[in-house]
Image 1 (cartoon, rainbow, N blue to C red):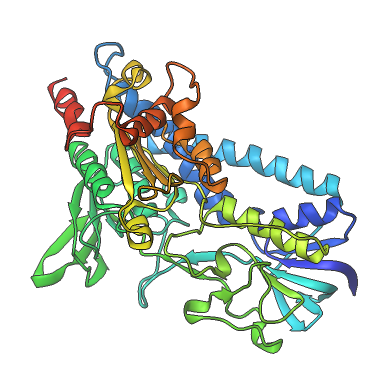
Image 2 (cartoon, rainbow, N blue to C red):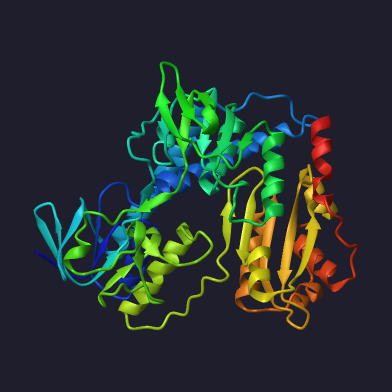
Length: 473
């Protein structure tokens, strides 16, 4: 029997953030984890971002034929080698930090035996508090068996050593669009298939339209409002059945139709922890479940928000929140300003409410849209494709409610925007601030000037001007 203060089921970003904070405050912590530490945080999310970093360098170089000689795209094998090295380096740093903190890690699948006991193989861990951080896994329709060659998921795609000449991606949400960007850059003919009428359906229509145009310009086919009927392996690929008897034949298929909580078979029912539809665990503001000494953080949580918050930094914030509550400390945390990045080409970033959500909640909000084409830094990076959208309250309410950015290095703007939203600062704060030049953050200031009425008004479609320039190159 191992006696400890806190037992954490799952060594993903949320679980490890909780473990680190508890250990730093003198608590004994045991992490029970099956698989690699950081879980999908490294094996899926991190690896896809590492692949994005490699492929986007090639994409942007290819857009400057006036400077760079024509080059072949990197091979999938080289990209995977690069992501493996990055993942290994990150994993070493995670293990080293846990060792220095004195956090004990037990490898194996943990199952809850009773209110204070977790069984791992033949060992028992007894703790005062329990944190569930078992994460999520790709949703796979019944009867379909994924592999690492023909029928891929976000878990297996990083083991695919042969680049498919043609690839169907089923699902045009975040994961589907990110991998569409990566595989198109590497040379695959990509077709995105989604049930929604537009890609990234949770985003505003103008953003969806812009990213769709960017995808089409790069040769990515988009089949919207299309529900696949089934998939079948063939001798040389995969056949995807579509409505009205249509068939899509490709070398491989990537399933990107959502994720499900990994809460089945771990014994939650033995101690009465409630689960919502799909296995998600409802929690309160302190990340507690309906059982007072049991917490849930990360992707297993039922957050009840209109925006997808299955993000590494959200899981980490929730882990910190749970740790503070166990320590008996208040921890004020709001999800209204959470920044996020979508690693497509071009990149997307956002914080706070979308324009659609802001109008539903606040009525006649004001919007300033500032195209990259007006920004000096964007022209220096060339081509100046993208825009910044600043969303503020109705007349009389100058608070910044949300920001959306689409374009190269969009992530450089969004952290600052998140803080402005969290602190409920007025958009006029941007007007009186002095921004570095040349920088993309000047786009945020420019959007504020448009709302103020002392800058040239945005013209519909202005952000599309540079697509024609790219086509002529």
